[in-house]
Length: 142
Length: 118
Image (cartoon, rainbow over all chains, first blue to last red; front, side, top):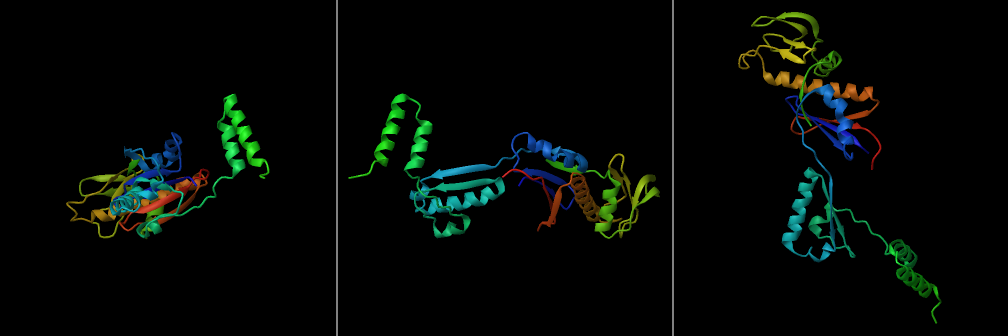
């Protein structure tokens, strides 16, 4: 859901922020509120970042890494940075368990792997190899 | 975007008065310590002189004398209430839903749902 947030401090100064907008539309979306409230005295562009840490489970045993991750999550709540850990095993330390939502995905089956292979195979030789692999995988084993 | 609030809308001024349980403003000319001023006259409790709002320029005229004639915080509170009301009015004009939340530091946060997106 896209939203416009207006925070008005106790002196009456307002800060307008847009959420879930992309590109120049974020400026357009809040223009009507900004013009209605008064005179613009400052502007800072913000962005939402997604930081993906692949196979990070091997580093999560170290105390300093866990602490750094905990600090990064806290800072990310302000700076709108979201951390995603991509791991083959679920291994979230107890200190961070409440900070993460665990989503488990099944490994891809042969048909899904074949689709991926077909989508990236462009050379005739590569396409032949994909077809050959598919035939091997569907042939009943003795 | 950071905005210095300007009082330009009478409906929002009235809304701020209702929100703060103040008497509604009157249109006219008021006597201040230094001269007279015309506009929307607002009487804040405990202030020696009224506050006069010029909705054309968005500016306010008042006498404070180093807060001896009234607490500046009262006026700040009025600006905050005005900004909240003005944002609500503008959001409603666009058919948007607004929710309000009081924050621990005394600020208020209005969230306007625009729809669409993830």
